[in-house]
Image 1 (cartoon, helix red, strand yellow):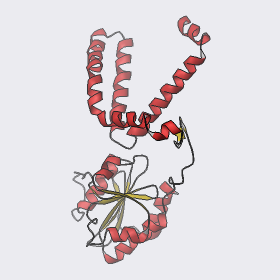
Image 2 (tube, rainbow, N blue to C red; image 1 turned 90 degrees about the vertical axis):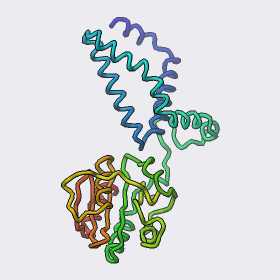
Image 3 (cartoon, rainbow, N blue to C red; image 1 turned 45 degrees about the horizontal axis):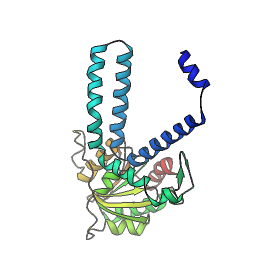
Image 4 (spheres, rainbow, N blue to C red; image 1 turned 135 degrees about the vertical axis):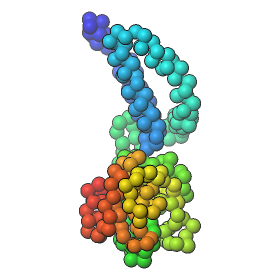
Length: 262
C-alpha cells in the first residue's frame, strides 16, 4: 500500500506520456477489431485473465500455475489468430494519414464526419413496401454497433447512398445481386449478395424460407436489424434479437426504425 502511495507521489511527466501512448495504441487496436468476431475473442481473453488473477489472489497455486501456462503459450496463439489485425495495425502506424496528421481522430476524440449520418428511414421503408406490392423477395440488414465487416466481405462490396430505386434494382429478380442480403451501415449501402448465418431453431414456422432463417440468424449472432420482404406473400417482416414481427404495416416499421436510428 505504501509502495503505491510512494509511486503516486513521484509521478513524472514521462509517466503521463507513457499512459497516453498506451491508451492511444489500445484505442487503435479497438478500431481495427471493432465490428468483427475478434472483439469476442478479446473479451474472452480479458475474462480469462481476470479469472487467473482472482485464482492467484485466492492462494490456489496449482490452478493458478496451470492457467498461467496457458497464457504463456497463448501469446504465440494470439499472434496467429490476430495476424491480419496486427498487419493492419502496423500498416496504419506507417500510413500517410498518421505521418501527415490528416487522421480524422485523435485518441478518444473524433472530428465530425459527414459520412456518419443517420439512416434515411423513408428510403428504406418505401423500397420495402414497393417491393411488397410486386412480391419481390428482399433481405436488408441494418448495422448498429457491430459493423458486420466479415459478413460484408462475403458479398459484393461497394459504397452507395441509400436510395429507394437503388435498393429495388438490387433485388430485381434478374439482377445478379438479388440473391443474399443487402447490408446498410449508417446511410451507406456497403455490400450486396452477402451470405448470412442461418438459424437452426425448431420453432420457425414452416412457411418461412431461407431469407427469414438468415434474418433470424444474423440478428441472433449480432445486434443488427433485418427486414425481410416475402417473395410468396409480399409480407414485410421485422427481425431484431432473433424475434420476428410479421406482416408489418408501413407506419409500424417506420416507428421501429426511428427508435433505433433517428
